[in-house]
Picture (spheres, one colour):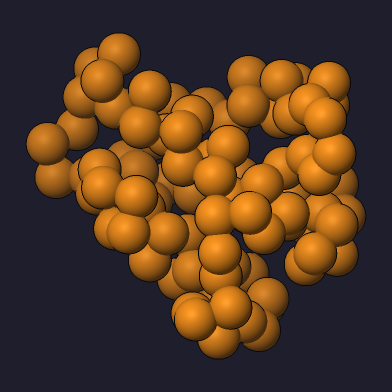
Length: 97
């Protein structure tokens, strides 16, 4: 089910993701947040923090999807896994599902 109030453009989603990361304690200027940024490799987010961030992202999008499938897919992704670009693509796909 799509959420008409949720951000859908890449820029809007990256802005929302930046807000979520800041709320989760990741200090990162918005201009340094690039699609190829890896949450784990570049930002040093461990699996426990990743779960917290995933929960915050799901809530920010109204709880209309879960990030479990994205996390599972990323475990088999070529390096670097867990990029913001892959997360944006996943979110956009969930919004149109």
